[in-house]
Length: 387
Ligand SMILES: *Cc1c(COP(=O)(O)O)cnc(C)c1O
Picture 1: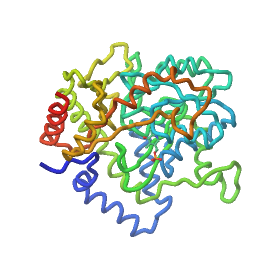
Picture 2: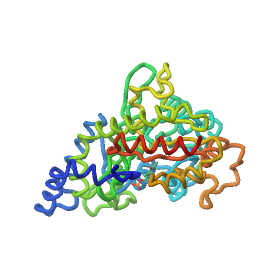
Picture 3: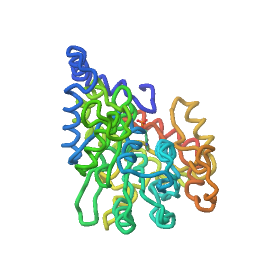
């Protein structure tokens, strides 16, 4: 059996090596390292794929979030609501901009921001909601847009984990994750579903004025060279990374399908175990797509995350590592409990789901190169241990 990895980027590269190498070589041959033609080409390819008017490439997914918030003119003290159960980047940029992060609990089934908790957290100071499409599944955008409209709030989608996912509205119409709110952001960190070979990120919007503003902010606030109209940053996607992404983008749908296939295998093998809760995919159509809808495109499985309900999560984590099966705890600490983000307004009783998830979740190897022999070994090892 091939050695199991959490993410196998090397095997994926081998399959597209010639095209990727050629693309990188093109940058080297033309010395167009920064803002070369490949950056523009990838930007246009991604605009077409996402069916969004503007893609603004930048240096990483954290910058993308920060720049999106700068573009919306949020002011110190404005409150921004986001999920308690996510990677810290989301709340970090809110705090860095001296906005007030307001963390709320998540939904037990989807791990995504809880709609009722958002409603409860809204105050006259609330200016934006940042749903994070966690582990590859789109948050309940229809309900979030409704709340945003009612209270005149911006919606910033943190789409670092769900690029390629489709969101289905109750009227049956579909939109790509990250293109639904006021603005969306993503990361091209190597292990993300569309990863480059270094750092990279992008911002998406259909708003022409906002797009113009963001293009200036990523480039020192310049709209004309050496005229700085707003305070900006230096955040660029370099041409070599754009060259890699241009080759990988046409494979993204296949990559998402391969991940879904691995997820189906896991769920089929594990769903009947009494100590395991397998992930729920839940498109926001009027018809709930159920436990694991085979046709569900709302989930691109950036992570495949189980809940272990018999108190043996940590023991399983160690047992799997001892048996050559990498696995990870995303995330072991709720953001409201992190030293950097403590706030006296938070009460433990407001976070029952997150407080439970940090103790029960475990993410299994998930990538485009898992084979059936590996998946069988992983699931059998889990079941044997928990029985
Ligand atoms: C990875 C990630 C980010 C940050 O992306 P970087 O490119 O590493 O800066 C932000 N939010 C979420 C949810 C992520 O998973």
